[in-house]
Image (cartoon, rainbow, N blue to C red; front, side, top):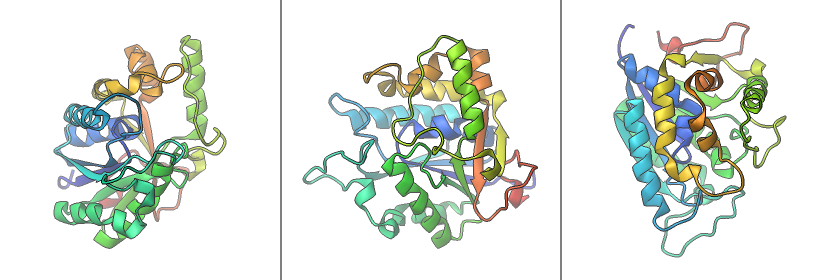
Length: 268
């Protein structure tokens, strides 16, 4: 390692950081890099009960501690809802999807500049499984990275082919399966040929599972077993098999047969 780098992970809601990038964040922190976690919303539409936003913020901080994050920042927009149908509340901050990209990117740009960030993570063009906040975040991250002249932008995704394999493994384990709520499996996330990084995070499966379990509010309610609960309940060896890889698309890098295993590879 030539020097410690600063990685800023930008996510739409609490728990996204653990699901998509938890192992990468834990690995970067363990290797001596500074990890900053930024969320656009507190996921107020992701469940029921009083003070859900406050509860999810507390869960976010517990997860961030498990992953070794040095700083957590909340931009303060409201969760737009799974189908963009969360009601706007009078006197409350605007829904994330309703904020123009340049305005939504202002707080993140300020953090990137203050942290002198080397790497920013956002989402792929599909917004993963198609949540409106995830799709909006894709554009906001790109705008902020350009405005702050952040050297590397990595878009967190999942290899579609590997996702299918993981779901089959969980079927064999006799678990209820989460359903992609919006985009179908053929339209969600990314083709293997689109990815530039496949990060082995198997050594950090414990930190990732602890972080997932911190989001207890997301293991409750709804029809069937929710994704967070499903993964958090998997036995260690199966969890490591299912969640031991994380994928990224580096903006500006042409995908090749060889995929980088280090999110800082371009900087070295």
